[in-house]
Length: 356
Ligand SMILES: [Zn+2]
Image (cartoon, rainbow, N blue to C red; front, side, top):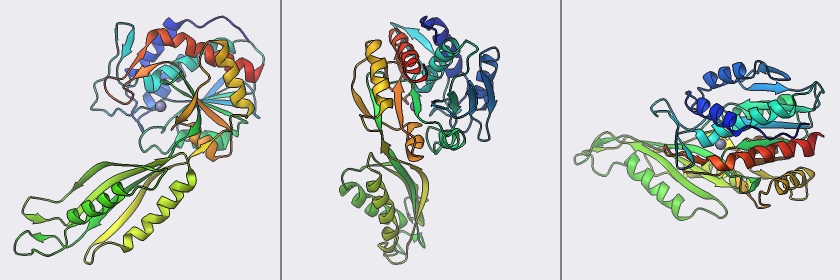
């Protein structure tokens, strides 16, 4: 494997080009097409799989390692895209999560595997990692490729290795009832009042180790109408899958606790499995050796990434950040330009540890 350091100028140019293309979850096609063209002269072979991932392989299966980097981001069509460079930072929606990780994978792997020798490596640029994408791309890739280990690349967070996968359960709760006039029908049950009561209880008594977030609420038709409908999207997170399973089971009981005259529907929007890889696993040891070689710290932590899909499929996986960033998922998202080289060096060293 070649050792020469990657040109961070190329990485930055690719990351900026990607971040400026539309690529919200479910709309990844433009970026996948761009990558397909970008890699036209690269070693290995590439195809778009059944769910829209771009799969890049360096030989036939079995694969010792699959590197996953998601191409989607949280920004929809309403977001004005554009990246600016200021005071050592690259700023713009999607630059850190996850354009820089995709660009780092392209640059490192294109260079490191330039020789004719086959390597037991698959690289997958995945769809559906963010929002309600359900890790669609990563789940499909793990099923199809069955690699021995998975490395999920994220832009932000090169200060630690993500060995614990935070799982989540996302649900839309909808209360429906008869509605009516706020005065003449007073006493009738209100969907909004009931939803507020249920949410208040959930927030006040979220069982450890779960976190809860009511992210969206809507309902009712006017100030003088008893609401006939109210809904909220709720997300619970934990690194403990059993706690998430208990919460999901509790949703069925909730439907029986609703006040007379009202109905509650709990629609499961997304389940992201929790999991972890033991710190003693050879994959973690290889990653930590590689990080020491490029001066990155040994710290470990938790995250919610494509690695969740691998761990749920029984495949050991860690997620790695490629640089240092701030304001992830906000329009002011930004990354430090001088942290990109260490992220690229880290990936290069991990590949050498695992493949050579
Ligand atoms: Zn991400």
